[in-house]
Structure formats: structure tokens, C-alpha cells
Image (cartoon, rainbow, N blue to C red; front, side, top):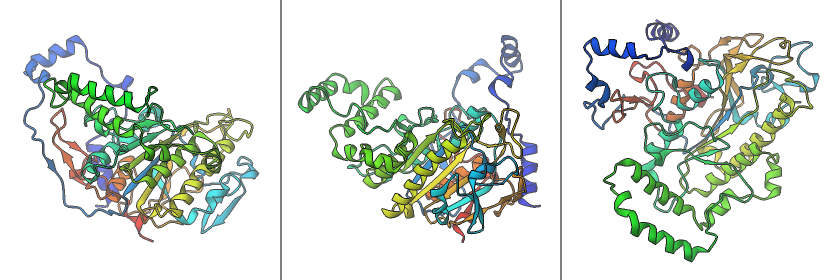
Length: 467
């Protein structure tokens, strides 16, 4: 049986329920008492499953283990794949200004993304990615947690960055004060799930002034006095707290924030000049890329950086160059920021140890435009990888003539690549066993880093590292 047949049979047998929250069955008072009457006691419903030990189990696998850091770029809103990284020229539709050329065997819109054309040798473009759902919020969260947010463990599932943070926590040095997981322009980023708050994304909107509130208005001496007073008043309630984990989380927050106060490394990494910003395009996205590079260069403990660039939901006037939300304008933002990031990472030697992954939540319709002169939601999409030994200058997988479906999958499992596979690829690149199951989850079911890992349903795209 082929990998693809096995995958499809498994999904048919154990359906991935992709309905939205509002379509899912809901509880009523009658349903509740019917359940009680069926022999399940109320105490079972109210108590946490007590049989799970705080242990970790995993299968024996070989990880790629070539990345020290990850930069995860989420193109929220879902870019049109056939206009960008899986380019298909549609006669009478595609603007002539996109000027497609063949570079290293890849058709590339030089007029839209001119700077990134020079970086194609660094990039591997995966073109056989297929989204599970076509709802923005659901698919964006799915991309960040590597599983169905509406499923049983969806509400407690951590961000991929939080898993990286907890796995790499033991490698942090006492002198490293930056958060392990940094989220830039990502106020809506998925959180740590059921994991301790120490592994939550530290959310920052880049500013030339750096991180706010890292100095006290009355000076460092006053701050130190108040810091000592804080500890004198309630250490007994926050440290090994008799009140449980929530007060202890506050202590973690306080200590982490204290490390950022009056710290020249913070100033150097999170502030930037107007000239540096302009080199990255002078935009919010460009500034996030700049900060990501500076933070990794500081080597202060950050291992996973998420950057979100919204604005790709182009249902109308997709090619209108006068609109800020059009493809020409958004393409320029992406081209400036992403190309500068790759250039600077390579120049500093950081690209060799940093896996860069860029992906949207799904793709957009192909062929002619809609009546609104736009493109609607569509499952076929792409993912871009660079760095950490990834063999660039090529595509993995291929789509058919109009980009509506995969014609070649391009990897050993010979099926569509799913968000869960991208998740497994990140973990493998970081030397993390993607089959890990934690038995400390509040539901007592065992939390799999990648769903159905015991069934080998998903796995890393190892072909990225094969030239």
C-alpha cells in the first residue's frame, strides 16, 4: 500500500473534523442528563483524569538537527500562490508588469518580486502543500499549532514556538535574558496552550525606540527599591506558592521582565535607525524582519521568532496598483523585507543555523479573476524554506498547468503536504523528536507534538536537505 493510500484510508477511518465552531454539535441540558443517565457519573466529568503520569514517550527517529533557530513568517490572509511562488501566467489576466522569467528552471515574477529573484538559490519552494480548511481564523491557528483547533485538544494545544521553547529551555544560559519565543507583529499569535506561561510568545510591535517600559521614569535606584519591596511583601505567595501555578507564573513574568530592564543588549537588539529600517523597506513587516535578525545576532536565548504579515486577503481589485492592499503593493513589502532578511542572515553567518519558513493559511483561486476582480479562498498553497542547510534554488512538488492541484508531490510520502508535516519539519530541523507524547496535559489523553505520531501519519519533509 502506498503512503498516499495509507494516509487517505486513515483519514477516512478517523476523520479530521474540520467544521467550524458554529457548525459543531452543542450541549443542551437534555444532552447532559442523557449522558449522566448512560452510566457516566458526574464525578468523571468534573475530575481530571488521574491515570496519566508526568512522563514523555516517543518513537525512535532520526532528526535533521541542523537548525539552532527558527524564523516562522505567517502571511496572514493567504497570498495568491499562482501570482507569487507558484507562478502561472494567465493570458489576458496576469499583469504584463509581472514580467515572468525562467530562473534556475523556475518561472518567477521578476516584476513583482525583483529582489527575491536574486535569492532563489537560497530558497526551496514547496508547491504541493494543501490546506485542510478555508476559514481564516481556523486555518491560521491550525498553521501555528499543527493540528485542528476545533478538535478535542485544540484549546490546550501550544504554538509550535512554545514547544520549541520548552524543548530548548535546558540549553538557556543564566546570562541569556531574551524570551525563547518572540512574536513580532503577532498580537493574534496562538499561545502556549496548557504549557506554563514561561513558554508563551513574547509579543512585540517593533519600534525605533525599542521595547517600552524597560526603564523606570524615576530612575534605576527607585526601581531597585520597589523591586526589593515587591519581594519583601509577597515572595511567600509567589515563590512555591500555596495558591498554585498562577501566582508562580507571575513570578516568572516578573523575573523575565526584570532581565530586560536597563539592559544594553535589549537596547541594541530592539532599537533601529531610520536608515536600517529603510534598507528593509521602511514598513512594519520590514522592521519585524530587521528585529528578528538583530535578536538572533544578540544570542540572548531567543530560538523561535514568529513574524506575521497581514493584508493578503485579496477578494477584490487584486492587481490595482493604487490600493495598499493590492498584490503589487503587498508584493513590494514582502520583497523588500524578506530579501533584506535573507541577505543579512547570510552575511552574519546566521542563515547556516536558522531555518526560515514562510507560509500562508491557504491559497487563492486560479485562472480568471472573480467578478470583483479578485481571487477567493482555495486549498492549494505553497511554503518557502531557507537556511539551516536547506538545498535551495528549486521547487519540491509541482502543480498542474493552472495551479489548482498538485501534479507531483515531490517527497517520499507521495501525498499532499499538510500543516502537520510542516510542524514535524520544524521540530526535526531543531533536533526535536516530532513523535514525542507528553503525558502532563490536563485532559490526561497524552499530548502528541504532532498528531497521530504513533501511527506515523505525518512527518518531516527531509527532501528539503537533499540537493
